[in-house]
Image (cartoon, rainbow, N blue to C red; front, side):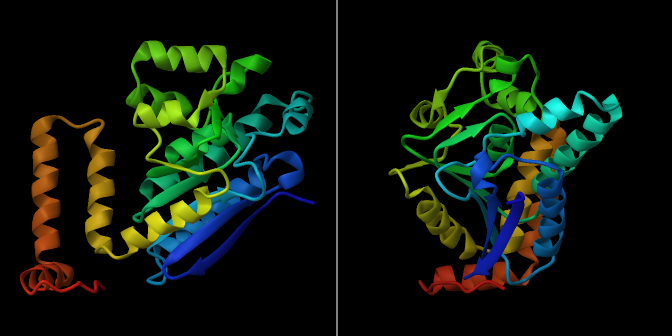
Length: 259
């Protein structure tokens, strides 16, 4: 069975399912391309308000296929570089996507699977799930933005430990450090992620998009620049129709219905 990215939409949430269960949902260029194409469509769809990314079966993703990587050693280096560019373009598309993306992690997220989870806006993980930046276990270094995300989230010494030793990290430890948002009982990560998506779907899409933009901008911005960005987003959102709906509903003690 070839690796594929399955998609379905219900109640405002698009479910993206990494489907390569015989290989523990190993990733590859076809999945990267499908991920970019799907997000491009979903970004322009009023039907989609959030995205949940999960793996088919008991694993989230084992990362890149070792068989494919071994075969690529016989090709020109540019061939592997193009493959990684595909992954990185998907990561960029996830960051630029104007709607929340939630990773639902069961089993393990290893290598590029860990990178993919870190690129999401939220992570919901089963209590018995594990994460691993396992690249050095096979004499490789990270890709998929893993080094950037860990450096942003953790002290350097801890990021060094995880990247250089490649050891398994329990979901509960990541939750305690603030990297995982919510813990779920084993087998319930997807259900809990869908419940979180339903919460987000009830909020104004333009406000959520601004939150995501502001967080992305803040990492490299000075305080004056970020204050200017917050001002511009706030004013734009105040004059959006949804602000009128939200303020009126709050004053009337009613539930808002945003467009």
